Length: 206
Length: 206
Image 1: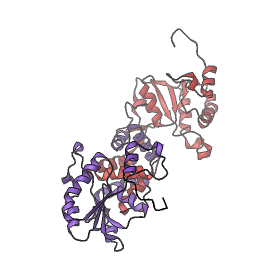
Image 2: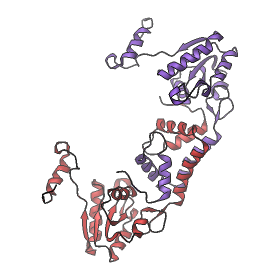
Image 3: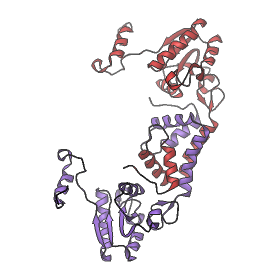
Image 4: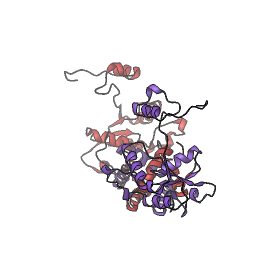
C-alpha cells in the first residue's frame, strides 16, 4: 500500500523528513514515526536532541580529522600510539573498523571521501593538503593507504602516491585477497587473480 | 565490524538513540547519523523539529481516534462519507491502507492495537468503550471488522462480536482469500482452505 494522503500534516512532515534518510523509504519512515508517537515525549526529545546537538556541536580532530569531542582526538593525543605510522582512510567508520581489530597502533588520517569525478568530488574537497603537511613534518615514516578497492579508491591511491612520492616516505596499501573463511570457488576472478599475484611467503603457519 | 568504542560521546549518544528504533541496528544507526553529519544544520533541525512537534502536538480524532490536526478528523467531518458504516482497524496505518484503495466511503474506528494477553494488552487498553458508544448512538448500521488475521486478531474480533451483538447492528469481517495475481500452488493451506470454504457466487465476471 502506498498512502495517497496523510490524515495529519504534522505526521506527513515527520514521515517526509525521515524518508530523506538514505535507505529509508516512505513505509519504513511511517513505521518509525508511528513507533515514536507511542513513546514518551522524553524519548522523542532524547533522539531529537541528540541528533541536533551532535550536528551543531560536532568537532573534528585538527590533526587527523576524525570526529572528536576535543581539539585533538583521543588517538592522536595518545602517547602510546606510533606517530610514525599514518593510515589513510575514507571516513570515520573506517577508523572505527580498524580500531575494532585491535591490531593497529599507529595514527589515522581521515580524507572525508575519495576522488570521484562523477559525484563532483575532487582532491580539493578532501583533507589532502593537511596529509601533505603531516608527511612533511618529519615524524611520519610510513603511510598506509586503506581506501576502498574501487575505481575511485584506486584513483585516489594513485593521486596520493604522486603527491607524496617527493617526500620519500614509504607508502603501502592494505592487502587485498580472499577473506578468511571464504572458499576459492565463490571468490570473484579479480580478487582471486590479485590474491595469486600478491601471494606472500609461507612460513609454516597460514 | 562492530565498533568497540566511539571517538566522540556526542556521536555515541546519537547512534544509541537512533538504534532504539525498531529494526534499526547499531550499524544502520551509525550510517544514518554520519549521513546527517554531512547535511546542513537546517536539514537536521527540520528532522529533529518535525519529530518533536509531531509527538508534542499530535491530536487524535475524538470520534474515530485516527490521528488528526483537528478535533474531528477530515474523514469523520466529511458529510459525503457514509456514517452508517464503521470499519474497525488496529492502527492509523490501516486507515491509510484502506483509504488508498479509494473503494471505501464509510467511517473508521481505530482501536489502537488488538487484544494480546502475551503483550499485556487487554480490552481496556483499546478504544472499545467509544466503539460501543458509537454503536449505540443509532447512526451506525454495519460494523466491518478489518483486523489482522492472526490469533490476536481473531480473539479481538470475537470479543467485539460478543460486546456488540446486543446492539443488533450488522457485523461483517473483510474477506480473506488468495491475493489477486497469486498462484494456488504457492498459497498456504490455511488461506487456500478458507478461500474454498468462503467461496462466492460466480456471476460471469471473476
